[in-house]
Length: 546
Image 1 (cartoon, rainbow, N blue to C red):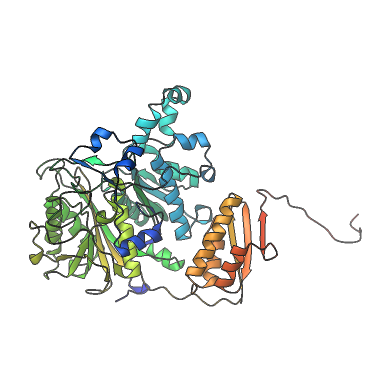
Image 2: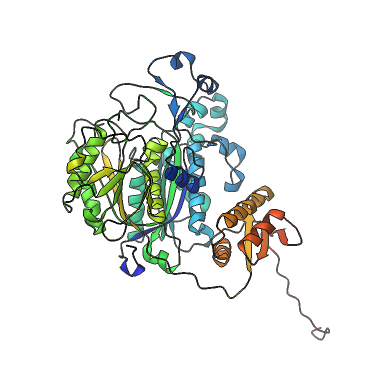
């Protein structure tokens, strides 16, 4: 059952933009394609690959060495000029900060709300992983330290304190700019705070997310029994073979608006946040690093209460799901405890974990789960949770509301509109839970009065402009049914206007794609706009004014 815009609550928050750079996926579309196909992006390396990556030969030969990782391809590439940075500034900047700049911009473009065309303050809530680049690459360069100084090296893009504020400064955004650090739950906690800021009118739009880049890349790890890392380089969440996960690298961001504002402006909505909650386990658990059933259950139940929904209306939960033998049973026990407060059915809700696809992304784990679940609601399909054979014997699935979704499934609503939960836990006990609902049905666009449309492209360089043209042509060909008027509107109103410009006029998607690819100057107008054009007043006449 789909929901209508008339059903929305004043506390509903719309997810209107998504961006992700994740293992095996350079964008949201590739990520969704991998999820649907059940592709595992954790890599297993041959001996020569590890040697080429700089791994110590004596480690590779150890029986407890696991040659697996979930790296982020091309993490070192960065268009410094696009963000107004010098080559030296970019080289000094932690790749985590660079990646988050990129996904933040991509999420805003995906939302169709560039800061230069958005009224009202835009907030940023985000966190990043450990600053390995700063310690191992910057501080070890004595000449650089002496030349630049530790103060500038730390403040120009390496310390965690400056992740969110760097985005706000470069994009000229004046809403709250807050760094969030709660270990593995960081980016979902950031999402919680971003929604609160919107509800409190601290901002009118917000970016939430996180980034972690494990350095060095393309190397394995040493397995130690009882710890979180997997002995076979796979994550078997909820499975009888569950013994841990694999750490990986990635970045993700979502753009949030109040649902009423998003519906009014005709935004593309992926999912709706009905409510969220965070808490901490406190001391009522085995140790500082251990999870707690009661703490998790209280956060989940609180999120249900804040959402105004009962657990029996939730069809799916994207779990933290690290695939540890004790962690998974504790998480399912906590979910069961929370669900049983308002539901008494068994086996109606499916669960899964994206860590089986891309590994554990630490501070970016929560936003990767949130994006996966938002895409699932949008496409009305639930991707398979991988590495599942038979249940972990310590999990009582028979007497719980849950079953593992181990195959691609069409999302059939259990009761009412499609709803899901996203669960994220942090070492140290900070738990976060978000309740999502499918987006309201969107009214069809009014037909255009014009038989043709004018498509506007812009970029900072000719190469980037050519790349944008090729990307648009590919999009139009793979989406022949997209309304050209909607595409033209988004390109004009939902994009920042850079100095390099290109204009194409066409009647159909195929005609536009063909014209863009041909590049015929008789059909395409390419020019460079002046930053500050002079104004000239011209007075026609025969000279009588003199």
